[in-house]
Length: 222
Image (cartoon, rainbow, N blue to C red; front, side, top):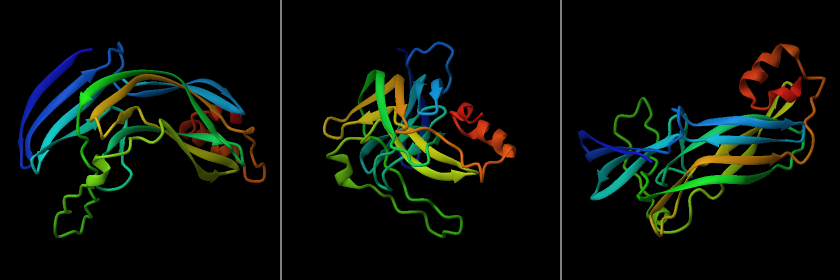
């Protein structure tokens, strides 16, 4: 595992130190989700994360770390809570799904002690004052983040196909110890609790290109 440190300069909030921790996946430059197996009743995916960028920023005497994984987006429970990178995808589900996600294999790397940066409130375009600094102290003293490695919700229906949104959390943090852990590789089995079907009254072949572009398991739709 290679570690590169680069002093990037000074900001109003304090000195910033940019750090890249490489997980040693040759040729990978961004996080990727690959569909390994796909049937109408479930699927198996593999997740690869090439590394993580950590930017340290001082605020009110505390060194916070902003976490970045190429190809991922940021999530948090709410403003003031620690933010973490996540991966997400959409998949076709049965009309009444009972989804079960099982992490079959996971390669984890302990990164050390960090304090993740708290998610800040959205700054509206017409705001005349900057959004206030927000940090929830209780979120940094107990609990565990994330609560689940894989999360899912039903996201509605599109032209007769039930959509599910899946979130993969490759980073975890223990507020009591401060230890940050990341997964470089993960294999996840997903059981839908039923078979995917299409409501033929609503289905349109003109939406097939959209399904193929948006749904990880679009192959089962024909």
